[in-house]
Every structure is written in C-alpha cells, then in structure tokens.
Image (tube, rainbow, N blue to C red):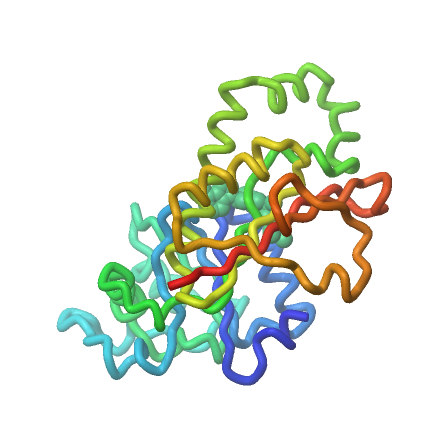
Length: 268
Ligand SMILES: C[S@@+](CC[C@H](N)C(=O)[O-])C[C@H]1O[C@@H](n2cnc3c(N)ncnc32)[C@H](O)[C@@H]1O
C-alpha cells in the first residue's frame, strides 16, 4: 500500500518521540523493501518542522554552511556501522539536538546533504511556501488505546486500578487531548493547501476523537472534514462518528481493533 502511494517520485517522512517505536518501523520498512524513499526522525510531533525534500528544497537551494566539511555529508545509510561512521554520526548528532535522523533510504533525498542543509528547510516553513509542504499527513495520535481489546486485556496483569488511573483520571485525559490537538495542529501546518490529513486513534472516547476535531475545526477555518470514499467502496465494517464523515470501528461488530478515523482537507 505504501509503495503504491509513493509511486516513482514520492518520499515518506516518519516522526515519533519514542526511539524504539521508530526502530520497529525501520525494521518493517526494511523487511518489506520499502525503505528507499523513506526517512525516520525521532522528534516531537507537536513542533516538528522539516519539510519534504523536493527538487526545489534540494541541494541547489540550500546553501551549505561554511564550517561544514565533505565528511559531514550524509552517505549511504547502513545498519552495520564502522567506528568511523559512528564517530561521524556522533558529530552530526550533537548533545541536546531535538531531532535525530534514525533512518534514511537512498532515494529519500537525504544522501548528499549536510545536516545543516537538511535542517535549513525549517525556515522555509516559516515563510509558508505551501507548495513545498506535504501532500498527505497521517496523525496516528497517542491515545488511551481503550478501543483495542488486546490492550485492555493487559490490565489483567497491570491491575484494573491502572486502567482507572490512565483512562478515567481527568488530569490525564486533559493532557492527552491537549497533546492530540497539538499533534493535529502541527500536522495540518505541515500539509500543503489542497492536501489531505488523516487523524486516527485507537480510542473510542468522544473527547479524544470528535472532541479534539471540534476544537481543531473551530480554530482552522481552512480545514474541512471530507468523506472517506473507500469506506463505501470497500464496504468497511464501521459506523458513522458523531461528526460528519468521521468513522468508528467498534471492535465487537467490526472484528477489528477499535479505531476512529477522520479525513481533513486543507482548503485555500
Ligand atoms: C498510536 S501510536 C502510533 C503508532 C504508529 N502509527 C505505528 O504504526 O507504529 C502513537 C505514537 O505517538 C507517539 N507519540 C507520543 N507523543 C508524541 C509526540 N509528542 N511527538 C511524536 N510522537 C509522539 C508514541 O510514541 C506512539 O508511538
């Protein structure tokens, strides 16, 4: 599916704050031979601001910094690293850096750039050239996982009071919905005009889904919920959410892990 979406020229950028989650993702990309045009960053999705690398933001437009040397150019990524490579990567990844490049394929646009060149396109985001933003963004947000029966079963071992603390505590709920709104807002900022964003969670609570979207839509006049046409075409086993065009997968009726999805179009 990913390969089909990327076609010949597309690239994919993955972001997660947890290194181990991205490392698992890297393993999957490599297992299915999909890594060539992908790059993965350990970073905070609420403020991540690297644009995709395109012809326009490639090495022609980004000036190398004068104190960078040829040895600081990203070479071909490989899992087994020599001591020299590790040392070089240590130099590239300085203490306190907020963004760590965990993986990049040969066709991801990273090879041949220096780190400064790679990071330079953040400033372009500020200048708001919408055409250079992402065509599609998926915000698969952190949530309480209450729709996932497999996850709920883990509380047999963890203790049901842990479920109460994690799921029913108002402070925890407020902080998670705040995080979801921030992830959604930043994902939308990175999206080009005319592009689409999918917001999903594996929670079935109103607050983490329609509640977050409601707040988001009130703040973004240029965001519009749109129909997920694949649903009718493929006969997905889901039900309507409480906002137009949103979908809910009830675990018992759909025989899937519980899921909420919404598709948002970025208008002019
Ligand atoms: C539902 S999971 C996404 C799973 C992912 N789509 C996958 O298939 O592996 C939510 C993810 O959000 C990540 N996360 C939590 N807070 C974050 C933040 N501030 N920035 C980026 N990622 C964050 C968590 O580490 C977790 O992996």
